[in-house]
Amino acid sequence: MNEFFLRGPSLYNRLIIVLVVSMLAIVVESKVDQVKTFRAFLTSFVSPVQYLADMPGEVLNWSANRFASRQKMLEENDRLTTQLTLLNGELQRLALLKFENDNLRQLLAAPVKNDMYKIVAELMSIDNNPYSHQIVIDKGALNAVYPGQAVIDSTGIIGQIVEVGTANSRALLITDTSHAIPVRVGRTNFMSIAAGTGDYFELQLQHVPHSADVREGDLISSSGLGNVFPKGYPVGVVKTVISDESQPFKQVLVSPSANMGRLKFLLLLWPVDKKPEDAFSADELRNIQRSLNEGE
Image 1 (cartoon, rainbow, N blue to C red):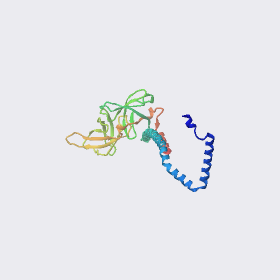
Image 2 (image 1 turned 120 degrees about the vertical axis):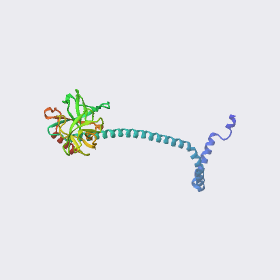
Image 3 (image 1 turned 30 degrees about the vertical axis):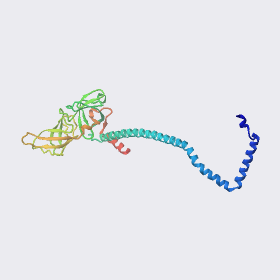
Image 4 (image 1 turned 180 degrees about the vertical axis):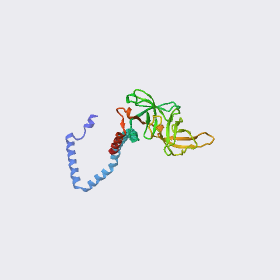
């Protein structure tokens, strides 16, 4: 077997033969144009084979790039989703802050008599008893809050303080069935009592004679009688007047000026002789409001 492979020219002769053939091929290619054409033909013929040979690698590269791109897109989508969620949360917080800021501006602009002082208080909780309209605020004895003190907001009278704790207080709303406030009709100065009906959106004027000139749309304000609520603060607007001669009095229903169902920030009022240290006068509040408006 080994002798068979040893037959033929020696390795040295083979090298000489290869060198001679190579030189001849170089000379022929440089001198004969047909050789170049034939080589180009061979290259074109072999190209599909090369493409087929490269196809598995190209497919693998395309798949890898496709997978990497899809993975990158998924990661980018997750990142953008997270950012959007955070921005939406921040937007909601900013909207709430703007709403609260608008409420505070309205409170600062609320009309206050020159002999009254006020402090902004915030709602802490609402009584769960459906038959009792009471709220708890975040001001108490530490802020010189006292029983019977008037509570208002930017639109009108809310109620009065009934219990005072160290750091919070309980207020009875004017819509509670046990509450009544002396009022007057702005158009005619007719005096009456506005009693709570147990409905957050309704008061009733008591003992209104049929001869009284009270109409729908009349403005109702505090009369100042009883020395609890200062005179001239909005209480509500007459929404219904029913005059039934078979009844001893007219039925007059009033819509409260304050929105009892959307309380947030409130104002506590003090007379001059009970002014706490951190309360503001009417002039001071006007200056604060003017500064806020100029800063916009």
